[in-house]
Image (cartoon, rainbow over all chains, first blue to last red; front, top):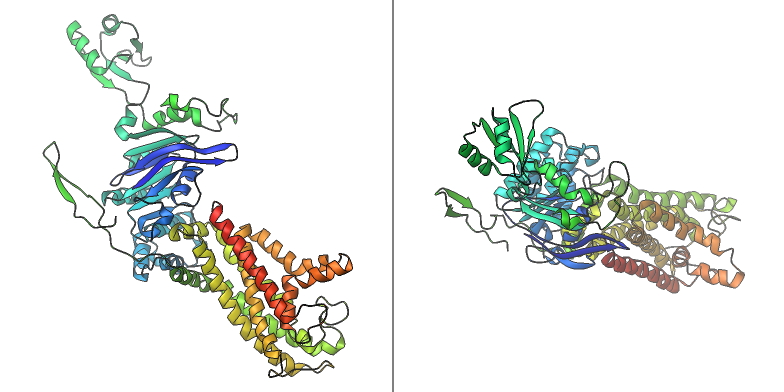
Length: 317
Length: 291
């Protein structure tokens, strides 16, 4: 379990992480999301004990990681891909890391096979592809059979097969009851693996929600209605804030905003309107994520910086 | 914390049973991190990269071969003792025989700096810090392993250079046998100085964290500083030159104790102050700075 309490990191005048508090619970995959530069890596480095917080603290399984007697058995982390000496073999790389905590060479072989590097374990790691390097990084994270696993952008640069492999691995690790904390700037990727989301922007917490809660945060709640009596529908539903818009392409399809599907159904029955379809439209998690973080994106596609650095991030939530 | 609890079987509201693991079932692997364990890890790292081993061996081989070359050329004025030679301190046969140290020290120092700074570049050092918690354990482990290995190899190199150099020397300086006063100390100082330069390289690696700047400062300290200090006004220059690490090393490795060097004992002291000062500064900044 990871617990972060009013964690703050200041670099000169810049607040990279601003009063961040959250708890990452065991048994599920928790996605750590935010645009580039939101402070995800800085937060993870403070959890790992690499950066000293300006304020607040981060604990792993109850204590700051650096104070744990055997950190490798508490937290397995992957921060940088290819953090290896190019001339050292994967096996020796892991043996050295294992030696710090007295972990056996047998366990080294075990994790090498687990990540599928058993065959190439004695080759210099410099010749590894990005995907192989990423697998080696994950092997080192799993070396101590840790209760908590923390991976920074693990799917970056992986091929589809590698992405699928990581996705399943994360779910398996969570299924075993471990705490799994994974950062990404891609909601589309995290939506497939994570059950809980911690979203930050400009170093501040935007949302700490489950997948269903996140889905409910979409601002756009349209209901698709298909009916041959479109004009009647308009008359019946007409009220303040209720909009009925035609579809443009299909004459019998209407998009209703301002009423939920239950109310639309009830009123249609009362008015005797024949309905062929009544479907609440869910916004994709990705578009919700974009909405939540749009104020926090540091650099927009135009390259222009957002007007107010500390703009109304919390309002977006 | 790490106890193994059997998964509980609970009834969900829907009447289905689901297993919810209370705490993950894990093997108890390893033990607490100790200085000894981290030292073992660094030893595995040092010997699993061939260029490290070749480099340390090369430093000793260079010492012996160049020593023999300078000894053989000693009287023809071509060695470092010749007029205007880079060493300029050859006042006896021993400084010719150990003349190869000028190059060996660079190899050792650069390897030491690389042993640390290359891990900053790749990010491996941060993996290590995450795994051991207390970062100074890594600094001490690297110092013990690389300093120790270099000291051992250069001690062997020192003896080999002494005997091989003496065998080929035919010049006019007095030659020494190992039993004469101060000679064994001078020979042993080769390994000691080598180990000290290794530690200076390690300290610079931790302080500067980049291979380029660590190597730059190292070369400046060992090679350029004597030249630059020599440009200062006389008395100041003489004093400053004596307390440079390379000159302190020369003082320990010489038997004749010329005027432009400290006494061997003072040389030892000055060198130790350099090494302890640099390693201490590196340890303090390592604890304070973000990794």
